[in-house]
Length: 294
Image 1 (cartoon, rainbow, N blue to C red):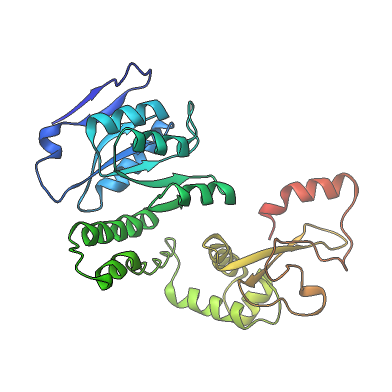
Image 2: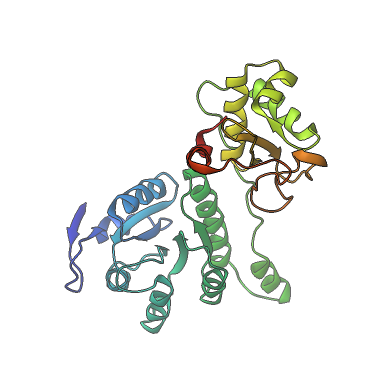
């Protein structure tokens, strides 16, 4: 039976699952979702509920609510955002430990700073997932956590080998293969990907279309898909007239010589230095529009 209630007088509402439901099955892993954006929290809650044996026992919107909710609901795992309105998320963890709570914490945040990630590791988080993410990204981490948690709970230490086995953990599941958007075929995607892999330097959509035999519009769509999923890098080539040309290179392949080497092998896209960049009002307009150019 589900209900709602305010904890510790905080302004926002904490949604909670009744204790009788939470204790209905011994193997259920109770999860507290902590995020100040209620719509984001709702999405995270829906994601968690799709993965067995996880159940969301509550949702908190502030650091103070999170501390109070853990004290009342006793979750096994806390999905913790870091940018909370009252506390930095990592500051919640020592307060939980000081109160005697041994729940695990998985950070789910847009914070990409190396110091923040190192701080999370020092606080003993079980995982760190960057926003935004897809359901599959969270699923593999929850399942990995469930396996490791079961191993820890079921371990009987008789020797150093038992300790080593626990500390070694379990291998990470393979990353899920991104599904193709509706209307795309696996065969054409493989053809475009192979062409991009084998290209000497970068390719435009028109060049890719000529090499594969598909239309320029189709080639552009597949190339943009590979860019979206992180398989390809995009650079801009500025000509004497017209919009800048988007050029694609398979990620990890060294840039070829000459004017096609617009993108450094491990860096951000940059305009080709040997071609003039439009100046004046037209140049400014085209640079604003370059994200939609073909």
